[in-house]
Length: 419
Length: 181
Picture 1 (cartoon, chains in turn red, brown):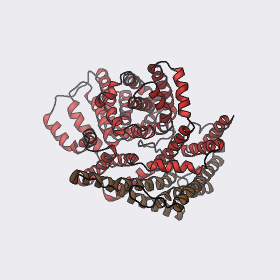
Picture 2: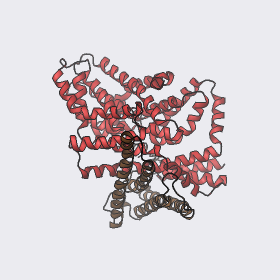
Picture 3: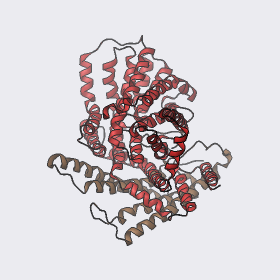
Picture 4: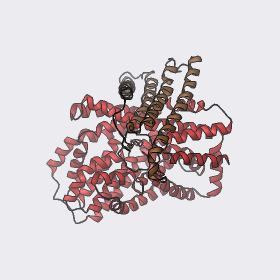
């Protein structure tokens, strides 16, 4: 009865257009009141303890470095470089689109910024090179989602924070699936555009474009190289990334001045202000649920339902794909990761592997109507109607599902670099 | 309903102040962590205070960021139920929504004040660097109180509300009709 009343209250708040923060906070106050335990102010005490952890510093710092790097003409430089490399290959420009998205995502850490930045350069270029509108839209929307899984990925950090899994391990584990998805999308680009190729390799153009794009290309090398070599933790690499981004954009490319940096910091703070208070309350809810032994009960129930890890993963995938169609990835990770990760662990599934599976599932939500974020962004950016974009992404959606199946069933794709 | 009309000077000044304070705190965060890395690379010993200083700077950034999220209409909000009520109810809905949000933030400002006051009375200090924690903790009730004030103002005059934009965990963009914003 109490649970039903809470659900009714939350639905009412949803109808009254309340932010997620209010929904979560109200649920917390309700459970504190009905459980008759501590004063509701303990919600914020748990939230304070959640904020008082240095692992969280990587989130603002990676978002800031990505925002700084995305300000200038990085997309054009990356596109020029990968275009020079892939031009003579069948479907070369399409492969360049996918690779540029993957590289841009590794630097900016943002799917939608990747879609907008690379799309603004590649969409007209693909059309003028004779690629179909449908293919161009689908390729950009799908490759744009690579930002979710390519490290440094904010959803991966959130998963690590909520489940206490090493963020460094998650970043390293994200490399394999990102490569698989990039390879699948590139392969499809080749097969579908076999007749399209542009001349032969031009060594001078390759060297020139590399010289121009080298500073951007070095960013993921510094981040991942620093982490993988053990020089930096994820948090430290994020601080190094910010300083590097400032040097590159302010001193080398000179595309950013102090005023613009101030504005970028403001935009980053706005993002953080919408995310971190939700994270505080999600951690607080998690603490409460753990105290009440809810996760153990959930684990026990799920363990009864699923006899094999494969059964759990299949059901979990379907559930997460469904969630991805109606919920944004940050909220889904904050709320669901603490509940599902213990179940996965009880099924003998590696916590890092499950984190990657979860993120790839939710990544696909960026391509699924009615609320797929990349579909909506593409609609505005490329001035196409929603139906056209939805139809354009269908083949790419199927490819992403193949990638998801591979990442789910072959843990080594995620874990091979972790030994 | 029109949104994004010029806001009162008090809210504008609050916005400016939050931007300046958070920019300074962001600078402290970056410099502290980067200095720690440099110190460790060049002297072999990190700066013991750097992580905690970064964490406290982050608390300032994200809590004052709550106000900036309110002033820019960036709070994460599930939108899929937006069309479930008649469109003609829109003007009333906006005022009710903003009033409810203001009340929620006010309640959480009170909760935040309670834990901060407790830390003040107990003279709680950081284990790592020994400073009193209540001045940093005070950012929590302050941020909720300012956010309550903003949403109360939006309820009073809905034209002051900013147009809603997206602010999804590091994946930002304008997203008319998206799943959350």
